[in-house]
Amino acid sequence: MSLPPFFYQVFESLPRQGPGCTGATKHVFSLLPPLPDDAKILDVGCGSGTQTRDLAALVTGIITAVDNHQPFLDILNARAKEAGLQGKIRTVNASMDALPFEPGQFDLIWSEGAIFIVGFEQGLSLWKPFLKKGGYMVVSDAAWFVSNPPQELVQWWEEKGYVPGTEGQLREQIEKTGLRLVATYRLPEAGWWENYHVPMLARVDELRKTHGSDPVCAALLDSFVEEAETYRKYKSDHGYTFFVMQKP
Image (tube, rainbow, N blue to C red; front, top):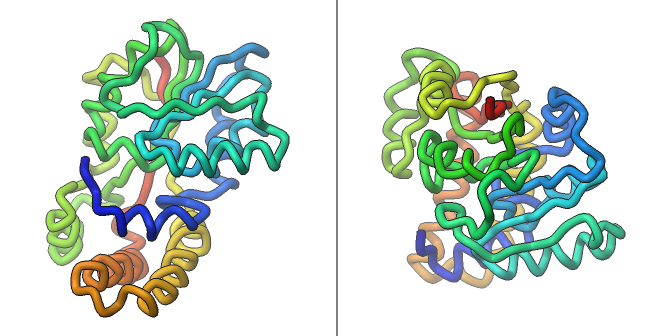
């Protein structure tokens, strides 16, 4: 997926590139059984790696964090060093649909809010071979919380080019891939608002001062405001759901 440079400029200074929160990462991790002391963990679509560092505080193994935007990886490396975690995190610049790893390499694959780039079922199918037998995969993705979401909300998602499935439909896709669903967890509102939309809106205000006269940049900034307003209006109808799965 090719994105304009200004898109990355918006996100590079933000703590997160999508909805999420440390509390949710910790809670979902607690749903897993104990991992081996030398566990190998893969974080796909890590961005600047807030959740990567959260995971590093929870495991004794090594986390391989993958993203295809090197500045995000540079930020992650710098923050990991500041936190004394550089020995537990290594970064790899690669596309999530062409991961450069051997089959059966990882005990846990983790991905927060990134699988939409390749599609939910497609991403599970692509990543499953890299898990060891009995290994676990955790992903979060957009989902409908209701069977008949408001048409305005459906249209908004359609314009973004990615229409969520219901949680039931996503469970069916998991079954098709041969993974076993262990647990689900909906990202709480704080993961959307305080941890993502609030810093994003502040960033939008900042960038309007320098880029607001550029029609292309202004339109992108407007889209982030619209995203926040859409979430606030329809937060009971949609959101992110974590899916915890195991490879039999």
